[in-house]
Length: 112
Length: 120
Image 1 (cartoon, rainbow over the protein chains, first blue to last red):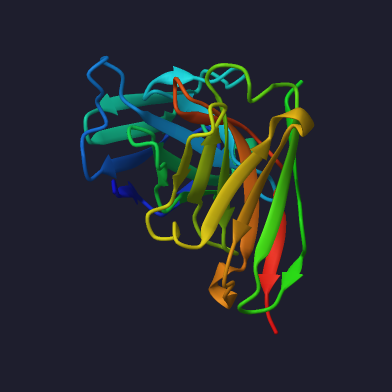
Image 2 (cartoon, rainbow over the protein chains, first blue to last red):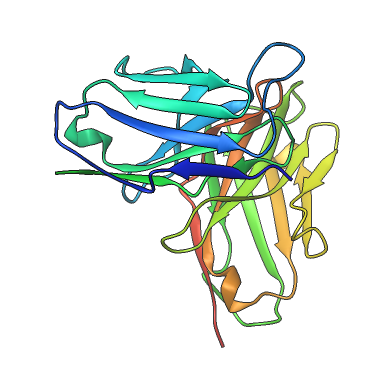
């Protein structure tokens, strides 16, 4: 099974400042069709996870453009250009190359 | 509008079998590419994928839990049922069902989750 590793696990950020989260997979997530099967989710306090970025770099419907995803193969990054108070929560990367999904440990973003 | 709702017992005893039902609307499992997955989250911990069922009855299970899990569906009722045998306190978690897009392999709509506590 593919193992997902995120860093950092905790991320204190001042509003208006940028933030970056790294996600690494134990195997390449690049499919032969050219897509990276890596998704990003945000779980806000007390809520279910919500899809942010799919297939490595595509923003889900309604997601602000301050969120962006990049990377390929085994190394991926989620960037927030300017953090806002509403971004507080836990960010998860998830591999989807294998049907048996696997999530990272989560990165908790907090506002300084 | 796609919605999913989990239902089941809030408390089960160790060694008992847990049965959870996911009732959904806004999509059909008979539509090509639509699936439903179960995912759980122990308090304060990360998400863990458990199982998935497709419209054509293909079933997939977590490698570590496959001997304890069974997933099934009732397409006419828009329901998916997950059973987990031999429950243990470490299985205490919020259990989510989610719609899964088979093509992109993502969970795009989630239920609100149901907290299951395992305790004697």
